[in-house]
Length: 313
Image (cartoon, rainbow, N blue to C red; front, side, top):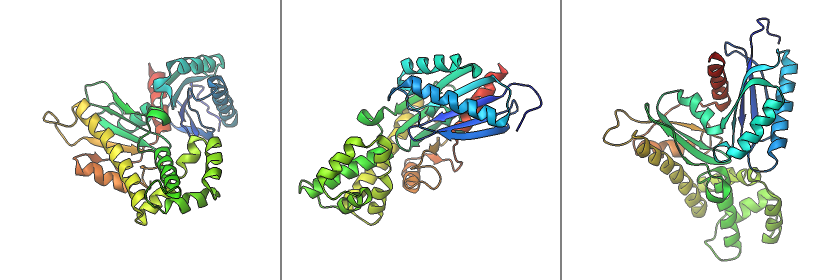
């Protein structure tokens, strides 16, 4: 599709730990091109290579749509950006050098998701997919973030956390160091391994996404009333609820001064509409006074909207 106006287009990018989504829009916000590429996680490897993948994907999208280049604004919400300003600068400089757009703005993936869910309004956003994080903001306040600190010290309640806890429980069960659980048969079968030794070798090469992919197996065993799996899933839900409760207090959305029921938006494979933890989490949040939005959140759409805002400046 070729634009006739000659006005600058914008591109919004949602780079997560599983995949990266791209949306090309004209100056009125109409989507003229879209694509998906490999994951983008800052600080996890070669940031320059990650930037080069973005450049290649955007150039391909521009070429396929016959769009005028360079673009007006590029906004990328990238996993890891909040904690890695050094990586942000490396990627931003590389993207500017690639002459993709006149303005390049890099933020965290949770920021573009919040923008799509609430714009400039108040609310709490929970993300739970491969990883987990939360962001909250009162109408007149600055954003407050909790969680999202990676696999070693964060990601509570995420797919990665559930998968890892499931594997640990399975190993303890096999070695008679823990409570018997059907997670042993379930996870070993899913991975095609028959011993802890084989599981160890698999784990040495497994990425975060591969471990997170086991979360549905753990949740299904919980649904079948395996007590160990049930405790893992229950703790995941409680961890995510605690994220929201802390943000509610720290932003003033919960408490004596609160003027209405605080809204919560859910995004990520585990808790978005149709997600395997959504019903459990919605119930847990409503029990403590939150109102969960039924609207799906599309982070890449938030990136496009932010790019359009910058285009108007």
